[in-house]
Length: 448
Figure 1: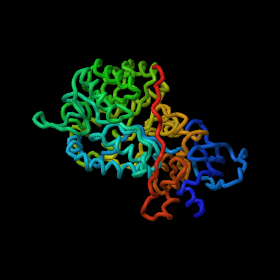
Figure 2: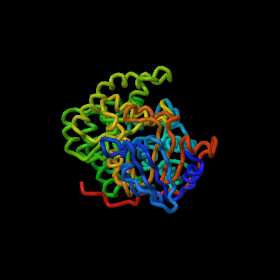
Figure 3: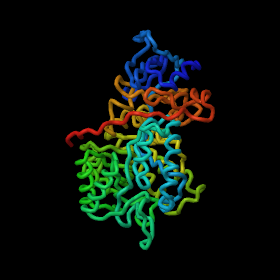
Figure 4: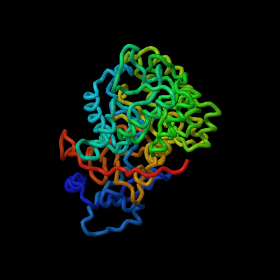
């Protein structure tokens, strides 16, 4: 890329055309081998094959990508900004909220550098995810657009109950509440604190101290009350489900996404197919423990449960794909795989049976639709934010190129260059300064 073009993109010049690129638009099954994307004032104005390209004149800057791949900025539907190499949930709860906030800001920048321009944080210490979201929007710190959750809501002895009974925590990763009335009150408290999404822990977890993954820890009544209350306020609901009944309770309640979905039987899959709920498998959770459990000396319970859960998990993903249940990429990394390696999830989706184009859609167009943001992110379509990713190589032939930092040439957020190898020469070890970005206006949800 020419130095003048690079500097103009970093500065956010209002008009640019990216030409002679392989376009993967996040929606179509086939790429455009030689195409262009025209950007105006932070949004995509026009796309198409080079045969339809016409110079517009004026101040438009033309950037020749010389056959590199151009696709929408990636989306991760399951992150935790505060994860920072912890070996257990108790270690997370021991992390002071002040340290968690610093970790979160660093990790947000790492995700942006990896080509992720939108993420959904599904559980935080205190209210850190909301604070990071607002700091990014205000241009105070670097990071992707954020859909923010508060603390994970779960019951006594559930996945977020990590401390002995004689200890208490006020700002850990989760908050323990019991009964529909108490859960509704907690949902309202989190809404007051500015969350976009509510996260429930409806089953045990491998790394939990009291409940195993096959145990259902929230009742159907508790889940239904939480989902109804969140939806009444226009918020979405993501539910941690690793047991058979947890998934069915969540599906009957109308959850927006099932996280993990480790155990899905015929009844659950039938409910899935009839619902608007999507699956976020988080296969990085599984494979990171299988690959690194012994090296990192992870707790025996976690390693043993993951070994048992592997076949359940991969079968659930394969069967969901067969039934055309929407699947979104969510990495759930930061404790074993470091932040910035989010694209491993795309690799694992392919390993689980998705085609490369399906896996890419799971991190672009499908993810945007699942998050209710279609038309604004996740696609190279007119009117969408100019959140763009340029990579060397063809991810439809090898999705691993998305996880190779040397292959990431350019990351654009709302029409400005914010990361990538093309940006590095201008700033050395530093990154371009943050700038204010646009966030979605809250809208009345569609009838379910």
